[in-house]
Image (cartoon, rainbow, N blue to C red):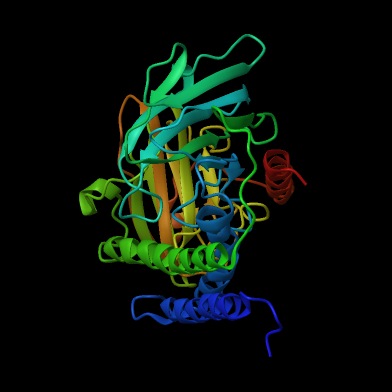
Amino acid sequence: MYGDGPDDQELRDGWHDFCEKLKQAGDVVFRDTAPSNAVTRATGMRQLARNISLALQLEFENRDPRYPEILHYFDPLRKQGGDNTDALYVGAPVNGTDTYRVSGYRGTAAYFAVTVLEDGNTPWGGAVVGTLIDDDLHVEEDGSFELVISPREHPGNWIRSSPGTYRLTFRQFFADWESEDPMVAVIEREGAFEAPAPLTAQALGDGLRRAADWIDTSVTYWADMLDKWQAQPGEFVAYGEFEDNAIDFTPGGAPLIAWWDVPRDEVMLIRVTPPKASYWAVEFGSYWWESMDYRRRLCSLNHHHGVLEEDGSLLMVIAHEDPGLPNWLDPSGHEQGYVTVRWIKADGYPRPVAERVPIEELESHLPPDVRRITEAEREAQLRARRRGVIKRFGT
C-alpha cells in the first residue's frame, strides 16, 4: 500500500502523528477562559494554522546550531507572544561550544538589540546569557558591524555563550516605519564548510513531532499567561509581577500589560504621560496574545506615531467605531484582549490608567481641547502604515 521504500511506514506514521497532534491542538480555542466572541474563536484557529510554518522553522528547518541561518520569526501573517507591531524579529540557533560570527549592516531602526539566551521552560527559551542594546554594538561609519558569539573572549563586539546557549535573537523596533531600514546580516559558524546530511525518515518524524508539540505548547502558554491579566481587567501589570519564569524579554525596560474588555456599546479611555525615553510603544492585540492586522488597521502607537495632547499626555481610545481621535486602537471585531505599554531607556515608568464608559458618554470624558483627526488624515495614517510594513518585510 505504501510502495517499496524501506522507510514508507515510518514516514506515514510520522506524518499521521503530526496531523493528529495538530488536530488536538485546536481544542485550545474552545477552552473555558477563551472569549466566545466569533472573531476571537476564528482568529485563535487561524493562529494555530499560521504558526505551523513558524514551528517548522524553529523546530525542524532551522534548528541545528551547526548550520544556522538568520531568519525572521514574526510578520503580518504569523505571530504570537505579544509581538510588537513596530518590530522585525530575526534569529538563529547557536550553541555554547562553537564560535559564531555575524556580519552585515545594522540598519537604522530606532531601537536595536541582540540577545543570546539559553533553553528554558517557555516556548521562547529561558535565561538571557548576554545582550547588546543600541550603542553597545559598535558600528562602523558605513553602517557595517561584526559580532562574535563564543565561549572564549574575542575583541570587538562579543557575547560570551554559556553551556546552555541555544538561540540568538535580534530585535529591531521601527519608530518611523517609512524611513528606517532593517538590518542585513549573515551568520557563520567557524569551521563550518560541510553540507548537512541528507534527510532521513527518522529526522523528518522527529522534526514534525517537535513542531506540532511547539504549536500546542506555545499557543497554550501565552493564553494561560494572559488569563492572569484577565483576572485584573484594566490594570497595567508587568510580566514579572505575575510570573518568575526566566524569559527573553526585550532588554531596556519591562512592558506593562493590561487586559481590556470592551463591549460594542462601550469604549475604553487609556491615559498616561509618556516619560522621556529612547523609544516607547503601545501594542494592542487579542486574547491569543497576537497583534491585530497592523497593515490595515490602527492598532499600535509609538513615540513617532502617537499624538500627544497640549499638556504632553497621551490619550488612547479603544472603540469599535472610529471615534475621530488620532490615537484610536481598533479592536478589529474582538471584544477582549491585551494592551501593552513599553518604555525603553526611560527616565520613569508610569502606569497608564484605564476607564471604561458607555459610548454615548465619550464626549463628556474628553478634554475640551482634545486632539481630533479628519477622515482624510485617517486615510493617510492607514496608507502610511501599509507602506511602512512593506518596507520592513519586503513585498
